[in-house]
Image (cartoon, rainbow, N blue to C red; front, side, top):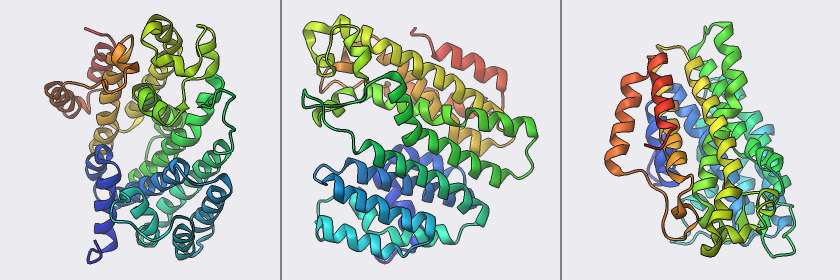
Length: 343
């Protein structure tokens, strides 16, 4: 990728770190596509710091601080790259796109620096908020059972605010900067439901990835809802305790559905003629609500090696429906209600 422009590199690495979001972002076009790409890449970089399996907490804190210096204070991204090299060593052929992104932060920041100032201002505070929140959660001690786990539903919602609600606020700032003249009532509704958009998608990911997270001994399903059913978090995967596991998961499904309903309201607050932005919101929302319904009460959700997936032919139907109904508020409400119920 060395011979690419910084923008072409950013588009290519986005496809590498998140194929599912790369295509919807491409629909936006122009400065909004560039800004959303950069914002998403910066968020993914924060996620890479959080998820790295071998970093001690002190070194993780050093990376967060160096990253914040770049994002908030226009610090030299080369210092961050140097710290990555010092802590993680030189690049490896098979180290993956996430670490490659960290080593190429200067390229992403050059694209950031060329954005209109209102779009830069929409990205900075929310990426910084995410980084600070993730830094807080990285200090959580391991439980006496040897597992990392969130404690309560409120704890889960706070975590989701940092990792995804912030993204909803960032996108809202970018959308409003791109749209310009938006009616006050629509602006107010967008800001009201901004967090719901991010939280809903994040909660669905948490629910469908229970088994994957368990492999690294992380449980985002809170201890308290597990304890109410006489379970420890790791018992969610016990085939002999399926009924109790589904009862423990039920409250999280309810929280996720409420958040996705708020995400629909967020999308409907966008002007009906802002079709690229509506498409961008609807595509992941439709996939999320369908995944949520398929996962609820489904033993595959808590069975390693059996991920909950939407059938390929249904994916095409869902995407076509998003494109067809994007400007039809009543049609979108009816379709969302239908998708919210298992056939």
